[in-house]
Image (cartoon, rainbow, N blue to C red; front, side, top):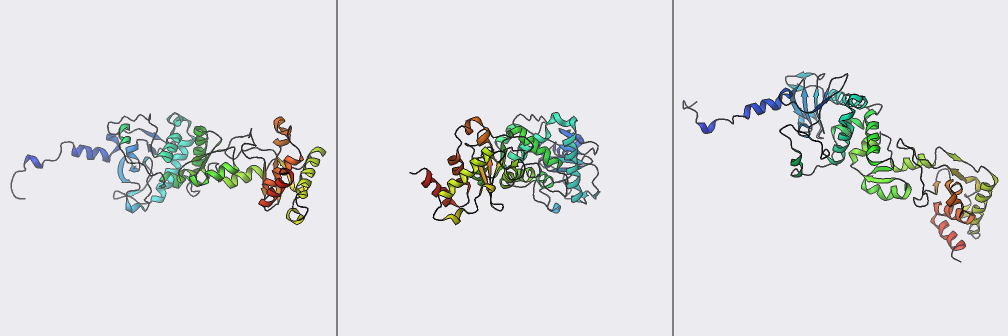
Length: 363
C-alpha cells in the first residue's frame, strides 16, 4: 500500500502455509484410523485429533469447541464422515451427525476385522482416564506420548459425545455399543467388579459384599447402566427377590425355620405384636447366583460378604441363602438359634436384633 518493498522480517514462516494446509485435509496427515463397514465412516484414533470433524477428508469443526454446535461436551475421537450434508463449509444437521457417529461405533463393535485394534478398550480407557494406555504407540511426527506428562489433568467428570450417544436409546435403541463396553469392562476388571461413584462404595460393600466396588466417572456409569451393570439396589433385588427362590423342601428345613421363628417370638413374650408379621410362611430359601452383569458369580464365602439373608419390605418376607444348609462347613454349625439370629439381624426393626441377642446370648 505504501509502495515500499516488503522487508524480510515480515515474511511468514516458511512452513506456515503447508502446516495450515495439512491440518485442513486428512490426505496430508495420514493418521491412524479405523474404517467401519459397510458405512465406510472413519474413526480417527490419534489423541490430538480428538473431537475434530472431517467430511470427505476436509476439516470442518471441532466438537466441543464450536458454539454453533450447541454442545460443550468434548469428543474422545476424531471422525471423518461421508454422508453428512454440508452447506458453504458448515454441517447442516448435527443430530444426523450423532446418529451416524453411533452407527459407526455399532459397525466397529460387531466387525471382527477390527478386533485386533482393541477399539472398545481404547474407548474405555479414554472414558475412565481421559487418555490411552502408555503403550498406545502413535508415531505420526506430531503427537508424542511423553507430552502427556506435561499436559493438564483431564476432567473425567465431564460428559463426552460418546457417553451421550451410547447412553441414549434415541441414538442406540438396542444398546449394542453399551453392551460391548460392558463386556470389555468385565474383561478388564473381572466379573466381580462393580462400577460405582465414590459415595456408593459403603452401600455396595454392605449389600453386595461378593462384588468389588470400583470407583469410575459418572460418564462411564451412564453407559454401563445400559450394558448390564445396574445400580446396586436393582442388582440386589434381581439377585435375591426374583429367581431361584423356593419354600422349604422337606421336614428338616420346615422344622428348622419353625424353631428359629419360635426363638424370635420367645424374645418378645411381653410385646408379641412387634414380631407378629414373622411366621414360618414368611421365610424362603434362595439359591444365591449373581448373573446381573452377563456372567455367573457364585459367592463362596457368604458369611464374610454378608450374603446370608435379605428382607423384602413390601412382601414382608425373609430370603435366606440356602448355602447355610447346603454348604458342608456352614451346615455343620447351623441350628435354630443361629438361624433365628440371622433373621433377627435382617428384620427392619433394630430392636428385634437387640432383644434376641439379650435373650439368647447375653445370659
